[in-house]
Image (tube, rainbow, N blue to C red):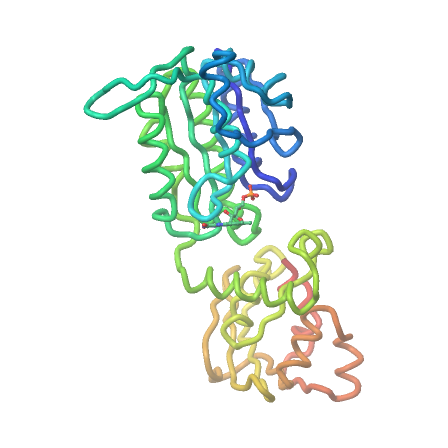
Length: 355
Ligand SMILES: Cc1cc2nc3c(=O)[nH]c(=O)nc-3n(C[C@H](O)[C@H](O)[C@H](O)COP(=O)(O)O)c2cc1C
């Protein structure tokens, strides 16, 4: 089986979730014996269809444009048994790069109008490869793919073998969701195998692929908003933020608690049993505490009954320390914040929350 796998994300490896999942799908296809050609469309020149219909009249089946589509991609598309359209969800549909490719497959059709199952269609000039639609989205709700799915079903009809839609895809590279991400990558490999062997994806694999990553939308929103605000405050692009390994900066008790939970390193915490309390002053003020026991952590609002350690600080000062903008030891010596209780625990904060 010859498969043409088209990735239309403009983002490169490491950043693109389309590419991440497509590469696992392809891995499964190859393991099942398929011959797969992966094309990153961002590296190719595809001019827009200009609607001249020359490919329907003067040079039937041949496009007027001289570009990568005419030279290599269209012949590859024609020769393929299966095409995988892998696209980031942009404005709730395929992105412009993939749409340009799909529009340029017009020579595949003949101009004539015929009726098929109660609607008007153009007959194929050549056999159309089977289609797999893969897409990833930033929002976490599965319904973000409703429009794309409806369009894909309408336009590809029986040729559409499978729809693999991954909402909340940015979480796939977030360490907080690592185990779910691993299961989803494994489902992508399995889906690839099944598509080659059975020309469909089993309900079980689809369920694994589409499993909920984000259990609590509020957590997702808090995390996302903290991330965007941090990028804006630092004046960096998303890529720069990730490459520099910048920590997101909480701007509320809620986002602080979340970051602490995300940063918790169970291995380093070991058999630590502790109640860690923070009393913040300044624009963001109030208390919260964390209970560490049996390698797990829980966050609570308000003061603890008998905290092991209490940090009292201006919120901004502590966030400067947390994000590496200020030296915690120096600020401690200059009494910019105070600590009551188990100082040894404070010294281990870097490790316990170092994830
Ligand atoms: C121009 C643009 C439009 C987007 N539109 C949507 C959208 O409609 N719904 C959504 O959930 N995410 C949307 N996103 C987020 C992307 O789908 C998400 O970041 C995805 O991971 C990008 O795919 P990639 O990682 O392969 O580049 C949009 C992103 C961009 C840049």
